[in-house]
Amino acid sequence: MSLGLLALLDDVVALTKVAAASLDDVAALTAKAGTKAAGVVIDDAAVTPRYVVGFTPDREIPIVWRIARGSLFNKLVILLPVALLLQAFAPWAITPLLLVGGVYLAYEGAEKVFEMIVPHEAHAHEAKVDAGGGDPVALENERVAGAIRTDFILSAEIMAITLASLGAASIWMQAVIMALVAVGITAAVYGAVALIVKADDAGLALAKRGTGALAAFGRGLVRGMPGFLKALAIVGTAAMVWVGGGIIVHSLAGYGLDGPEHWIHEAAVRAADAVPSVASVVEWLVTALGSGLVGLLVGFALIPVVGKVLAPLWASLWPQRTPVA
Image (cartoon, rainbow, N blue to C red; front, top):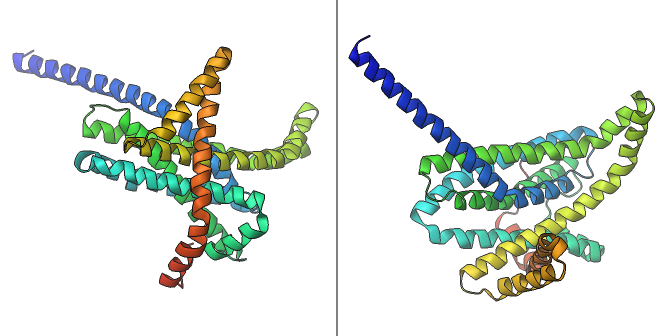
């Protein structure tokens, strides 16, 4: 065998080792980034099913699929390149953009709480903001658009957490890992949502065709899913409020207004110290509660602003606005 061929084989082996090491790095960093974003992923999975509640069974999976496609578009086409460009050329712009997203989430969540407390006034507010009216197709389009808007904020938080966890990785490594995290998280979230919204149909099939314990399990699913979906809608609303509030608190701290973040952290640490056996759970709960209170305050303050100022202004600028199918 010629020396030239041996040298070429040595180069191939060396390149293969480098490629394998790079793949190992990608896998390790992807797992690390996905783990850090897990909290927002759980919130995303809790928020989404509420947009599907109230539609006929034949529309549930198509609606979930439409939202999932919008989520992938948000992450891969908009947020990934924008995040990399901002980090490279305008890192100062990331915090204010996240702050705007947090305020939007706080408003969305507070609006749902407002509807629970005073439904008549909430319906009057929705009439000013909602273009869906009584048309089922328009209502579906409006729900899907609303879900994709909410997903955009949660996705921005996921992508920001992912990017922050990558440290000094090259821009190409960052792009690959963020794309992998985006696809993996979207598949996990909307796969889980699809299973949740179709669980009652699966239960009905088991109740009709199964026997014994299997049929009993199916009947239990059918009876339990309406209550579960209502509970999940409440959790989703709470998630919007505490994630929005948390983004607001952290963003304000980035501008030197760290009082709210400090107070929430101190309260969480003291509560955790009081029950050391479940300290981490208590600390998370108190942090979520504090963030949620901030989110509610900001959201409630925005409800009259949106209803009396922003919605009329939007209607005057785009009077013929119709949801896109």
